Length: 295
Length: 106
Image (cartoon, rainbow over all chains, first blue to last red):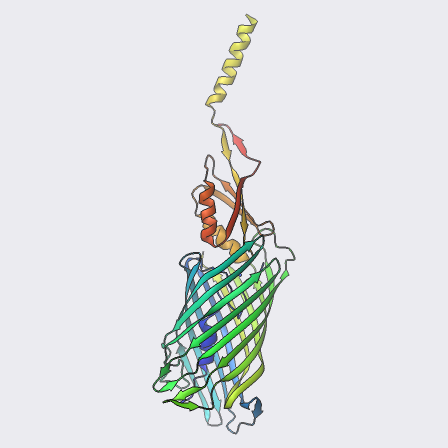
């Protein structure tokens, strides 16, 4: 059994940025809790591709010419239980197409649903700026189908925990996230645990000075996303062609034209991959999304 | 005689003023720290709007202030405003009355 492609997508979606002078980063989480009583809704399309066969850090020819393209539309609804505690639900709708010389297969449907909680640990506020650290934890449920090909879920219960930190100033913001996922198993297949990290630098292009709210706003983000994934195991036998590490750079731009709407686009470019054994590597990705507030 | 007449004029001139209700629409300026994003301002605005007696709200991110125009004859305790700001997820620094106020007679 192979680790479903959607797994890597699901790990990245499990802890999405929620719902931010700037908006929140596109890939990295933000330490500002703005669930807005469940009325802050995020809808985005995420595109992830895998098309190059890797052997450790080198690409090799693939006689089967395999490729996978996954499109995910996660519906994210956060809710502030208190001003210090936020709970969110992420329900991803997936469409996964895998191709090879043998043909093409597509699966569409609901992926693995996650519930995430974040709590403020440190908060230091000043005029036009804030520094915050949050604790974060989540559970992923095996709601995605494993009986279809390609699979839409892992079939496993996973838990994750970590931290989100950020300093947001007048025009710049620096954000960071560190997350460890304890991945479960399903039908004898144990998924390797994952350590994820991301760093984001945000800059408000316009306006130069943000005075009276609301004003139309443009933000630029430059993010780096990394993952260390441990090897999987099949009935306690290690799968040598699994796990590894990857580093992705993700520049993006964000437009906030009104009180209730935010639109954004980001590209994901893998700049380093070191994969165990022989595996399909990660190709280019993109995120196109909207966040809106239900008045 | 003249003195009596003047006194009566003054008495009947001033007395009605005592029965006039001076209506003031107070404006409060709340200094808030941590307002570092547009959605932050939205969240604060929504919470402050829920307070009874608030007529209008203006938020200035550069000054870190929320200006509350209250309905006529309404007063809100500073502690209530500070509590609302904290519930929005930010830090209140001060609540002050703005110097100007509107006065209208009945």
